[in-house]
Amino acid sequence: MTCRLLITGGAGFIGSHTCLVLLAQGHELVIVDNFSNSSPLALQRVQSLAQRNTIQVVEGDVRDADLLDQTFRSCGELDGVIHFAGLKAVGESVANPLLYWDVNVNGSRVLAEVMQRHGCSTLVFSSTATVYGAPITFPLREDSLTDPIHPYAQTKRAVEQMLDALSRNAGWRIASLRYFNPVGAHPSGQIGEDPLGVPNNLFPFITQVAAGRRERLHIFGNDYATPDGTGIRDYLHVMDLAEAHSATLAHLLERPAPVQLTLNIGTGCGRSVLEVIHGFEQATGLSIPYEIVARRPGDVAKLEACPAKAEQLLGWSAQRSLEEMCTDGWAWQQANPMGYRNAP
Ligand code: NAD
Ligand code: UDP
Image (cartoon, rainbow, N blue to C red):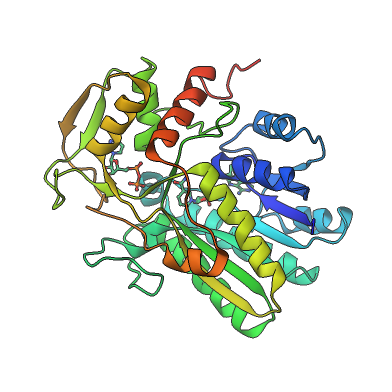
């Protein structure tokens, strides 16, 4: 079955990879993105990779109800929405919590209201593993305690709660996907992660060190209660995450409303910072100079998914190795040393 889907934030890192998967499956896509953290070039490349030049792009803000109303009116009946649009920098959320509550929470509320007005009630929402806070017991299952410790995670948890309430009393089909740490890029090297300025995240920092754009990686602490003292995260290939979205949509669309789902999306295999560095070095043959520095405020020792529920309900599990995450991320970095900026 092919569908007509609205993708908010579809030009971003995860959105662009998901659009590619959906386009290749034959779906019709309408993207709403204000390009505050992305480039329209990503969508051009998605279309050329899929060899389908059919994406309808609407430049605008998800908080703009008139723009969303107009989009729903003009693009025919929509079967579902994937809502990626949002802000994701933890430090920025601490400095400017109101902005995060506005874009992430108010943006999601406006979108849900407009969907309701237009009779569209199937929604996949981008949540995050950081809603678990600083867990000390594992495995982390979806019913494990949530205890978000910064405004970014708090806004994501608030949207989950808003959507849970909505799905209970209004015939909706809603899935909140708690992503762990998506990394890597499409193996073509044509689309990938394009952080502005100094990368906050480990993976793009490593690829920029490998490319010589930065001298060395700072490892934020080696005194955590983990086997080598560095922080552990559950890194997954962004193409696996993209496929999780198409599996989730198919699951929702096959079932009668109401459906409420919360799913961890990770590999179940946590890796330390040092393991990632060594994995990258092995995969690429390059060396990554590093230095141990102080812990980064707000970081936790370990986040690792129990991905069993997604496997059981969706038949989805992460397929790609750490080696593929590294080689594909490196191919993107090499082909696009400055990301989408200054690209031909
Ligand atoms: P991204 O910044 O690359 O993509 C977000 C997209 O949304 C961008 O294209 C941006 O221009 C757009 N956008 C932002 N604010 C908007 C607004 N008000 N109106 C319209 N468009 C807007 O981020 P990403 O890594 O692709 O993340 C996508 C979603 O997944 C986000 O909601 C993020 O919080 C969530 N998430 C990301 C990660 C991660 O590690 N990347 C982990 C967990 C959850
Ligand atoms: N990290 C690091 N140096 C960096 C960026 C990240 O040592 O320049 C560590 C960080 O402390 C954490 C892990 O790498 O243990 C993953 O961090 P990232 O920001 O990529 O993801 P998140 O903290 O959001 O899970």
